[in-house]
Amino acid sequence: MADTPKSKPTTTSKLPAELRYIQYSHALEKKYLPSIRALISKDLSEPYSIYVYRYFLYQWDDLCFMAIDPSTSALLGVIISKLEPHQSPSNTSPTTFRGYIAMLAVSSSYRNCGIATTLVRKAIDAMEERGADEVVLETEESNIPAMKLYERLGFLRSKKLHRYYLNGSSAYRLVLHLKETGEMMGAVEERERFGTGGEKGMEAGGEVVGVI
Image: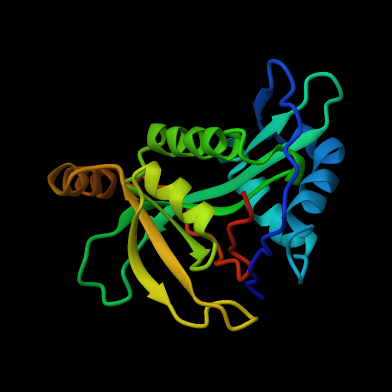
């Protein structure tokens, strides 16, 4: 189900004055969910079911942000994320509180204006406020603009995922460590002591980072 965005030539429009960045909420679903789906699906060959969007937006609406044109209320960009406990497959490492950037898309007319960078920073800040130890994502290895954006923000390449997408393209998993090892261990011990850390949700098969 995972798909990869297609890079397309862009024509940058003038950025609206005082662009608004707002946190998604359930009350905004009727107004903005269709626009979110349209914006993200535009660059994907296989659109996701509405249930994939609702999986993220219902549980982690506070980790999803939108860029809005203040004059028209049009959606110009969106980032969808989640945050939950993560246990390594080998069970040799302690459980961490891992943020995940699932979808990121910006209208083709407004790319290269800093919207994607602002959306990512807002998502990271929100995850950090909730105690995230790290943030991860996957992006197609040929998506150079996305790779540069994330690496500027401190993400590191942690793993190459061969033939990760349905079209046979490979991806890189990127990780941003928000805490030093000692600090992370202390946070893990505290969560285990007090039984915090959130509920473990289902793994969505359509995790993807969109064209920026």
